[in-house]
Each structure stands twice: as C-alpha cells, then as structure tokens.
Amino acid sequence: MIEEIQILNNKSAAQKPRAVEISETTNGFNVYIETYGCQMNVNDSEIVAGILAQSGFGITDKIDNSNVILLNTCSVRDNAEAKIFKRLEQLRFYRKQNSKLLVGILGCMAERLRGKLVGHQDLVSIVVGPDEYRKVPEMIEQSMNGEVGIAVKLSRVETYDDIIPLRTQGISAWLSIIRGCDKFCTYCVVPYTRGRERSKPFPVVIKELIDLYELGYKEVTLLGQNVNSYIDMENKVDFAKLLVECAKAVPSMRIRYTTSHPYDMTDELIEAMASHHNICNYIHLPVQSGSDRILQMMNRHYTVEHYLDRMRKIKELIPNCSLSTDIITGFPTETEDDHKATMDLMAEVRYDGAYMFNYSPRSKTKAYMMEDDVTPDVKGRRLTEIIEQQNKISRELNEAEHGLIHEVLIEGTSKKNKNEWQGRTDTNKVVIFDNYEQNYKIGQTITCKITRSTSGTLFGDVV
Ligand code: SF4
Image (cartoon, rainbow, N blue to C red; front, side, top):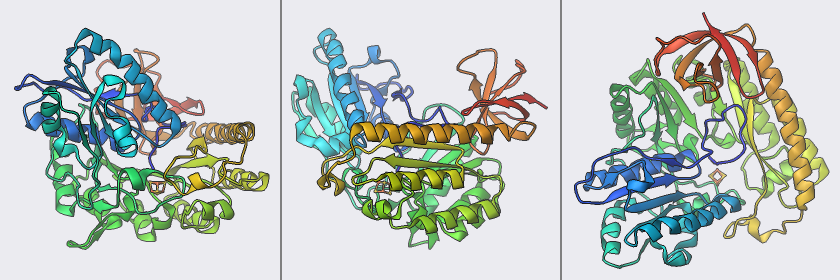
C-alpha cells in the first residue's frame, strides 16, 4: 500500500497537494488539478491531464487561471478525507469570485463516498472514481450545462494503457504498471476504491519506458499498489522478468519500484535487483506489525519468520540495499507483547526509514467490524516509542555512511538553502552537497563523499 503518512529519509514523498503542469486550451476550459495522497494518485492526475489535453482542455498549474478545479483525493485515512472537506470550504471563495467555476472530486474518496459528495455545499458537480477517468471531459462539458455527474464503476480491465500521461516536468517519472489490489488486508480500503488487480501489457510498459528515456527522464519508478503481483499472461512476464527487461531496455536510467508485498517478494526478484546495476538498491517492504497474531488479523498472508527470511535474502544478495517499511500501531486487540514484537522486529531489521501511523478504522473494511479497543493514549504512546526507535536507527545508519562515496542524481537546489544542491543516492537517500558549484545541472549524476548526516539527510562534498 502506498500512503501519505509520516516518513523518514524521504521527505520529498507525497506530503503536500501538487498541481499538474500546463497545456494550452482550445475549448475555453482551463483545468487545475490538485493531487492528494499516494504516488498512484500523482500518476492518475497525469493520466487525467493527458485525457483532458487530448480533448482540447487546457491544464494550468495556477488555480486563479482556472474555470475547473479537480481534487484528486485519498481515502486511506480519516484525516486524508477531512483535509478534502476543509479544502472544499476554501474553494467556496473561488466560487464567489466566479459563479461558473466547476469543482469535481476524483479518486478514492469519490469511489468511497460517491453520492454523498454530489452537490456538497452546492459546490461539487462531478464525482469520478479511479476507473472512470475517460469520462471526465464529457462530464465537465455536461456539468457546464447544469448537470451533476457521478461515475464510479470499477473495472476489471482498465489500465489506461493507450493514454499518454501529461507528466510534471522533471527528471523522475512514475510509470503505473498495475492497478488495484487483490490482497484484501482487513484494514485497507484500496480493494474497494481501486478494484481488482490488472496489469498493463508488457510491450506497453517497455514502450512507455523508452519514451520517457527519450524525453530525457533519468529515473523511473514502476508503480502499483502491489507491483510484485504484476503479470502479463499473454507474454509470460512476471514482475522479476519485467524488472530485468526494463533494466536492459534503458541501461543508463535508474529503475525503482513501489510498493511491494512481502508474500510476493520472490528470490527471482531479489536476484534480478542484485544482477542489474541500474535497478536501485532500495526496497520498501511494508511489514505493518511484528506479531503473527496481528498479521493474521490483518490478513497479511505472511508470518514474521517469512518476512525476516526475505530480509535475510535481500541482505545476503544486496548487502548495501536500503530498506524502509510501513508500521500500523494500535490495531484492534494489540497488546503490549504485540507492540514489543514490532519494536523487536524493527530493531532486528534496522530499516533506513519508515512510515509509521496509528490504526484508523475505515468503513467497508473487515477491521471496521472489530472493536477499535486500543485507546488513543496507548496508540499515541506506542507510536512515539516506535518513531523514537526508528529515528535512532536511521541516525545510526546515516552516521555509518560518513566517509562513503555515492553516485548522486541532482534533483535541484536544497529547499533550505538555495546555495546548496540536493540529490538522491540510488539507495533513496537525500544528499545535500556542501560545496556549491554553479555549473552543475539538474539531472546530472555526480560523485559525493558523505561527511555528516542527520536521521533524514546526508551531507557531502563532491569528489
Ligand atoms: S489491501 Fe493490503 S496489499 Fe492491497 S493496497 Fe491495501 S494494504 Fe496494500
């Protein structure tokens, strides 16, 4: 599962709403798309922008220039939805300035709340789920004639494989290879909001990848709720084979992927990573809990022993691989012993970073029927303990990097100091260079020696 939550060591991840870049209008509509939540949503907004641009709609990154505002939403936690309702309040201001302004809700929240959103505060006139984005242009036109539209049917086949996403300019691109999820973890809304798994055909993935390379992108992340389940039956390509073929197709591009499920983390996949230099040495493998009893209640399909066995295999074949995970604390019936088991697992694996958050019940899930019996105080205390332990481990692992040399892909100037550059190692760690040099370019790879660090950032000198 890919989520917008607390993260260590990857602070550029999906934290704030983002707008898609510009394309000119030929039909008078200028659409501003604001994206919330996970990387799948970022890529979906690019797909929606691609569909709209093909039909003559303009895409703007300035809300003041728009006459259509689309919010691409996340449902994974309560506060993600609360954020959207708050945003809708703010959008009333824009409606006051322009009575013809159209507001639409896309994504998981559209799928989950459906009719409840239509007409919300007399503001929302289109509601479109993740598998119905092809209808957005038509629905915008209809709603300008006063109609209110809702399209939330889930599909078993839609992969948008013929749509060219209108990507945000940059050096890194998301490439969605699989949509939906069949795992049905008991706490998760994704199988209900994004439907069942379906993979993009292998030749389409390779073509999209080569197109990205030719457009000048330096790094691509293969994307899906569970990429390890990728399968193209016709071409007999599973995820390990896909990864190898991607690495061979664009040998000078960095290839990443997210997110993985421990049940499907095969030896072949780990071997594929170990044997191709351009597949980045970074794995995000959500564990969620260190207690077998809780994992079973979560319907995670693996035991702690299986998970640790996967970790041993990764460390054996890719010794310098950086690791991160997701942890849910305070799942129904979680005891102090279960919590301690999670702390012990984290101490044993020693992740470079983690997304850690309190359990939040979501209606329509199986866990919603379980009593949410861990009190907010206990959840809060356990979460603090987990975060503190993770911070300590991240700090220690980053200190162990001092003196090491890394290839760093330059992403831009440092957010805190315009006189410094910021880049990323293939292990997904952010590096700030101490010695500023005007001639460097975004997208260039340089070699850095790490000189100091915090728990979330490395600092280095170009060598
Ligand atoms: S059901 Fe499980 S594996 Fe699928 S997206 Fe949700 S948490 Fe991830």
